[in-house]
Amino acid sequence: MSEKKELIRDLTTGSVPVTLLTFAMPLFMSGLLQTFYNMVDMIVVGRFVGTGGLSAVSIGGEVLQLLTFFAMGFSNAGQILISRFVGENRRDRVGEMIGTLFTFMFSAAVIIMIVFLFSYKGIIAWLNTPEEIYEMTRQYSVTCVYGVIFIYGYNLVSAILRGMGDSKHPFMFIAIASVINVILDLVFVSGFRWGPFGAALATVIGQAVSFLFAIALLYRSREQFNFDFRPEHFRIYKTVFPQLISLGVPMAIQSAAITFSMLFVNSYINTYGTTAVAVTGVARKLESMISIVSQSISSAGGAMIAQALGAAKIRRVPAVVYHALWIVAIPASVFALITAFRPEWLFGLFSSDPAVLTMAITYIPVAMVQYLGATLRPANFALINGSGNSKLNLAVALLDGIVCRIGLALLLGVVLGWGIKGFWYGNALSGLVPFFIGGTYLLSGRWKDRASRVDTMNHAHAK
Image 1 (cartoon, rainbow, N blue to C red):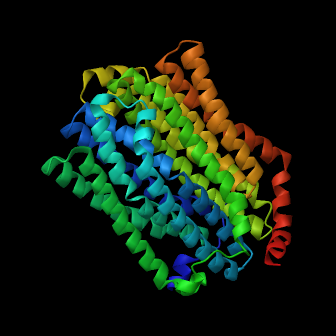
Image 2 (cartoon, helix red, strand yellow):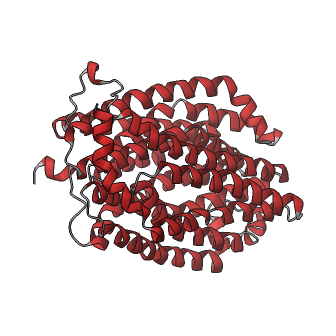
Image 3 (cartoon, rainbow, N blue to C red):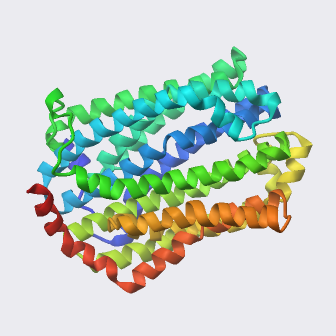
């Protein structure tokens, strides 16, 4: 099989569930490995440093998420647009999008890194970080920020490959990062006793090596992408930049709004002490296990819908949405049963602290709501993102990320006096918002208009 056939794939033909599962499986495995090596940080630190170190890694991880919203938003937008160009058979636009993405996102990564290095003290203080773990949180956060450029780079290259229909190589890259991270975690934290700093350093090194492998693959396959990596081609192309901004800004706002609102909610949770911080951090990691299924199906479904609309294959779109729903429902149900009947075992993987395990039991009903949201979200996100509806993306960002998450958390946690359970439930219930918006959009049929606008939009930007 030629390299071209391995990297470029038509997602508009064949059985919808088979194509969806085949394309999503490497994405799922990538997410699983990424979650795994993030969990390894918490497991190793929790075992060898204690609850304080576990809490520091939890808060530091949330800070890092705040810095990567830009990468998530614009790389996802780039993937959707590249998928659309592939569906339209516009390879010239693919090359221009690659040059634009590299120039735009790496510039943003450097700026964000510099801004954080001057403001991290205020961010950590704003999160109400307990004083006894402040220094460990600072070490973890500052070390991780030096790896932001590699995170942006990995997301960028992976988005390009997924947009072309290749989900296998991004899995290989994250596998490399995972193996390196696990080995170095044990060496730095268990062996050298460097604590959270060692865990962060292991993560950064793993990401850097993974990114270098990704760049090497993209360079070797440069002819397929119509991008030759010459310095003069790393620039902003006005033929595609308006489309990237139009779709990327709402998606970045969506990512930032959700991350910011979660940090806001967690700033209240952090006032309940290190045990509450540890339980919340472990719960987030456990929830991410089912979230990786949701995200892989959402990403795969979005690429399929984008190609289908680009190729004007309208009937394929509702089929993608339907199959995305039941595919996620199966693992979500299994995980819900495990959480309901074996919570001590799950939380015990991270901590043996009796106080942590006791509080963890009270989180079970909240987890059930989280799993429901994780089941309903991906199909609707695939439709909204795949259709390139920037206005609807913005609506989801504001409602899910700001209005509902923060509003419900304050209502339940403060006004109604539910305490930490109120903040947990507020965060969980807001995850249902995309289902109601996306479901209404699907039934309205207005997404069909996106296919008829493609050629018009491309000609307009080309002038």
